[in-house]
Image 1 (tube, helix red, strand yellow):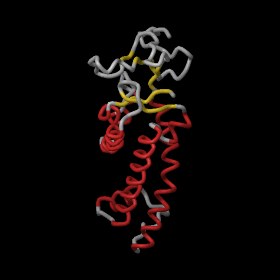
Image 2 (cartoon, rainbow, N blue to C red):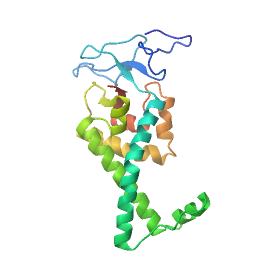
Image 3 (cartoon, one colour):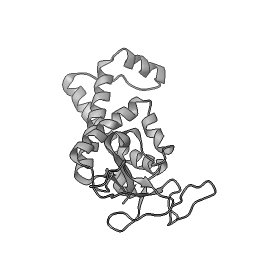
Length: 200
């Protein structure tokens, strides 16, 4: 691994230019503010080198997860609408202003659809974070979530990280976009939960 002209470390194996080597796994008896970004590749506690994953690769994983969650959420919305007799207006050639008016007017069917979609997404994220420390999108693109010691996140961290997705979205998605500017490639949800997304 070497520094480029601007002093930013590059991946030693020619990987994603947005990935950055970090040193996790400080002994638990030593105070730590989290993983540190090194000027050279640093070994982790198990003798390997850990690289945080950049914005574009994480966006790709998010789009894969969205493609998995959306059909299920749509199916549940249709079932709930059929049971409750509440249906979304036909989309047709409706523009953005039309749907915004429905949202601001608290259209029951639209609020139900948004609520179900959010609930399905949160359950999906929480279950996969707790059980495998990665979503399906992360698994496909070869990444996982760790804590500041290089371990899988605890259940409590997984809950905070999942709720952090809501916070990142509520900031007009700036919490997600921050990944592209943060030195350690962490979004708002990562900072809240004390987690990192790394190759693995």
